[in-house]
Length: 246
Image (cartoon, rainbow, N blue to C red; front, side, top):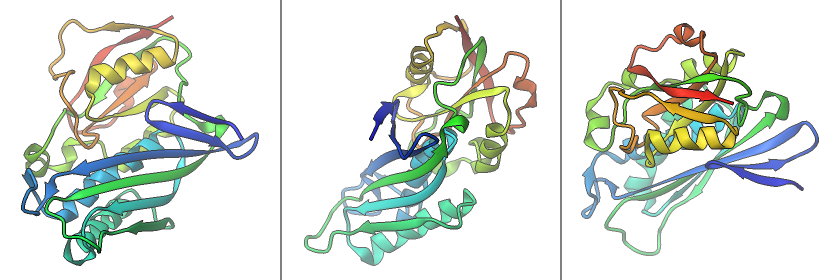
């Protein structure tokens, strides 16, 4: 059995043609518990934590077949609302048939909200969009880095949605998609270049903070054929971060 790790993804070969793709995310101190730092309904906690893991698997070119939730709180009422948020995000992603399983903490009281999500997918190796930039490309940032209350206050249209991801995955001119999280745009752009054995030339000035955390993947990077970027129909912020070349 061949196992390899690329970025935040783990790949386990099923056979010569198919691979399992695994991604995970964790969330702490975001909810309505006494010691939570950001006070939001646990429904939102479940929704956005699931978004990260789902996006990672989808952007790799895989189909999500399973999701686990490890909830560090009681089922009623916190766990129930977190699971409701996870199911809502799966619905938004158009994922109807999925194995959803998890656990809650019923032995001890909890005073802050904690959650872990693991998404499992299956992909045809030939259709993977990972380390797939073989030529010169532009790197676009779709969306703006947002964190905490900003996300709650911002419309979801400011972030990449699932229909756009599915559309981009179909296009040969879109070489690779990379969700950005807490390490920020700059880190992920350098990882993209390194993993594809390409040189990175950053734009001198961009109207986005490339160092800031993008929270629950409020930014998705797209490595595209240089003349293909106008085909991306995204209503939110989109700008060229740099270029990749041999």
